[in-house]
Image 1 (cartoon, rainbow, N blue to C red):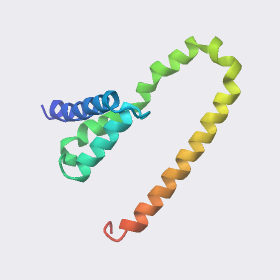
Image 2: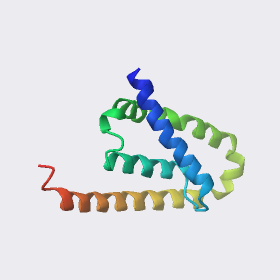
Image 3: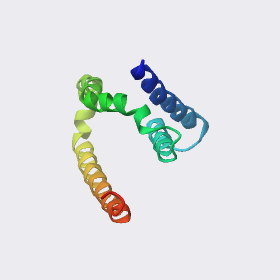
Amino acid sequence: MKYVYQATIIFAVTLLGELLHVLLPLPIPAAIYGLVLLFLALQFSIVKLEQVNAVSKFLIAVMGLLFVAPAVNIVEIWKDIAPVLLPIGVVLVVSTVLVFAVSGLVTQWMLKRGGKDNG
């Protein structure tokens, strides 16, 4: 029953993210709204970590399986994307490097800012 409760919390936050995506005219994916909402709920103790911890760990463990369907779709549309494969590759590499850099800088900033509290 614990897992059903935890999954319900995560799905409810995901649903709220979907609703925000529909209601707000911003070019932000619904998943980002959901992540921000869950982060804020955890940050302000509206949701406790123990309330979503087990299901979150499970979802992270099976994350690789969640990418199988998009990979299969790429195989299906290969004829359409083959001519633009180089630009797609460049965008993927540049965006990946930017995400790594920004994530690293934010992590360093957060560790410097709150490092004394963490031990």
